[in-house]
Length: 84
Image (tube, rainbow, N blue to C red; front, side):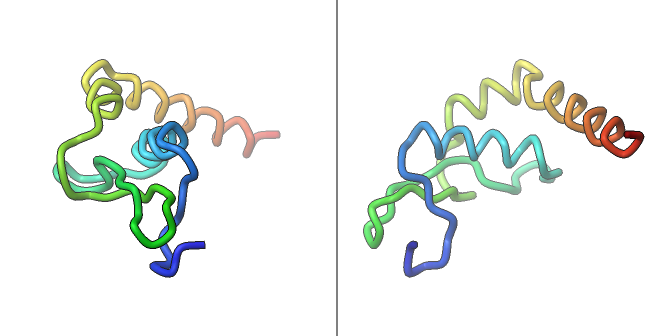
């Protein structure tokens, strides 16, 4: 656990996945929300940040519609869960 209280990820791969998942789960206005991650000097893990240059995989997922499609799929999944 990081002294900062921020959610920690033990690898860059997990931080990247969490970054993309955050954009799938939440509605961020343009220019808001996490765009990258950094390695914490206190705990050695990775944390998401809304500062800096946008992560390449996130930028690609936004540009090619992957996040939009995943949001739609998650919405349908939630609707189906409610029916059953």
